[in-house]
Length: 441
Image (tube, rainbow, N blue to C red; front, side, top):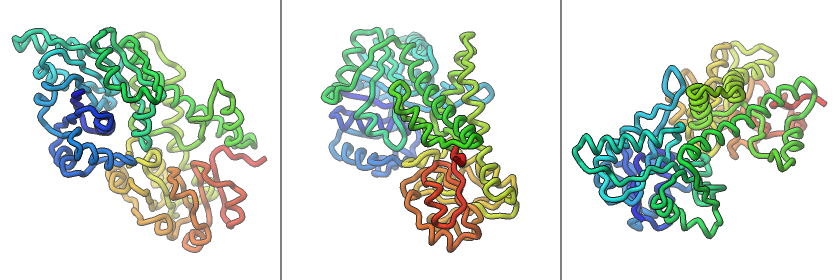
């Protein structure tokens, strides 16, 4: 099938490349000339394991193209995906749908024959209705016939760092439509996955839109819940690692997203929980649990600096703190809402100097972090530090040479915000250890 992907950011590029790998003809559209030129030159502007190879292989095969010409891409497409950004709107936290609606207007001017228009972007409930109205009115204002268009919701469930695997081996595919023709097109688009027995769930459009927000809010709630249990465990003399395992073995709960740490970040959970709260208020149905999740998570990130201060007996002013891991999670260069940002700001407010290292996020982090010494590797980062803080659980940090670290640090103190190491292991190496939710038994 012929697919136009409007937006060549994270979701659009991964989805477009995967659809092309299924054998469909895909044209990715973006208004950023620098990005399109880079993609046409074989350079992928985001870090995602395996994506560069996937993109280049499908470009070489002639199934994947990049352009700024939206009209030409839409005109020949069977399905047009809207995969543009929906950032939080300043002031009220609602999703900013400007890019979505602008794309809808341009699509309206270009469609030719029956076309399925798919919102892949994360959008509040009712957005598909508005996209449909915009396309219809735009065609009328242009003096043309009513466009033969079916607007579908098909939310993405991609984890950064594992997006290709998630797209090709999904837990489920949610498709919101009541149009039988659209259903047939979407079935054909995802048909290559049927051998993997991927469950395609067809539902109403508004239901599909709300499924995405409800899923992210629930996962954010699990993270926040185990973080609060971790705080209690520290004070009560229990171990949150064992608590998480003990409750996660219950099939009704499950073990995923029960890892205590510095709080959730990234491009999805923070903005999606805020947008869901705003949607709840708009419909006079406030979501009190989600409100608490957002508040607790926001407070937690800066609170991690107090854990570092505690590890240094409150004597942090004038000290150097080494931070390992800046991106919000491993295997991505995404710095959006990363816990490292408020943590480092709080450390600096306390009077500490900060050295930092991340395997792939160094360039992006310079836009978010000021007055930080960026280093070449973990051992360079630890030079002269009174405390080493692990913020992101990159695999490169899971087998550190502690004898070497001890030789370059001012004090052998490790603050492990991801519980990578065992306290007894660090004690053998002569390190003072501070984890998350690991109270003394």
